[in-house]
Length: 426
Image (cartoon, rainbow, N blue to C red; front, top):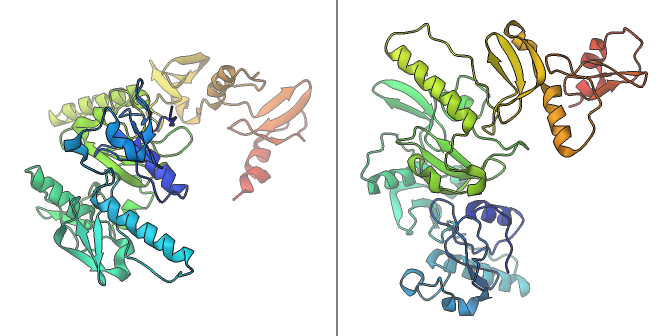
């Protein structure tokens, strides 16, 4: 039986290509899932849409026998697995390989770009120009650029224009001549900035604004996208932008690059860019749903002229789980990722700015890992800077890492924490 990691098609292809595979032939659906029939490295099988693994009760067959699989459909799949764009691309790869074998290393081709579903990529090269193309290979006029400027071309706007047209909708944003979105947009006299995917990142900006400061900078007043993160700091596989009615969700690689696969936000439940078990039935997770509901309620109050209503903020982690504390009746309690309180760690809300709950949360992490936790926490859930183990005094920082073991009784640890070599690292 073929074994695959539980990552969906778009991410799996991106991973294989990042590892140096130039001959990946997995086929992905528009929303990043696996197509039912898959072939790769001369083996074909009937695949689970979400995991890509071989369906129970079926067997894998050599590529030449792919039409014997129970999931084969002559009308749908045709007479060959590779689709038109892939066939051209693979013939180029094989020709280049033959030239190299024969010692001819100077032969080049204009690369044929294909999408993960086998359709044509976002541009085609003809002569000294690159033109934006739709998935069937037809040009999207008049969007093109010179080969010297190809690296800056993404054709996102040109393709979205075609997409909106096919959906019977009007796209109101402007495209550059190369098919990219114009960063500085205007609507009804109001100027605003959009990112390369066409989503608003800053509103009511002055004329001549350089929008890159909002797209690539660290400005905290952005009105656009805050990406979802995994616990290890990588990007979550599925990222949604805009509102539920007209927004869209895209598949992303771990390093934050948009890859093949998208759907309308309202259809996000059927996207698995990564794993349906991981994502569940709703893009917003429990903490985010509660926080978002608060914002919507406040917005309704403001709309009706009621401005004095307040809620205790619900902090969430970047992966959508509950944050490290919550406030109830003037008291701050340390919480775990499921929103439950951790022990008796608490402090009055007027001291909230000093709370990080790192020590309280680490007690849970160590307990779940079966590792004894030997450091002391303060009543507010922070690490005690001054620690004592078996009569040995030492200082730790706010993350619980030792910064010095050379400390005298009753000596303050602050000078070691803020002046240690640990804080001088690049």
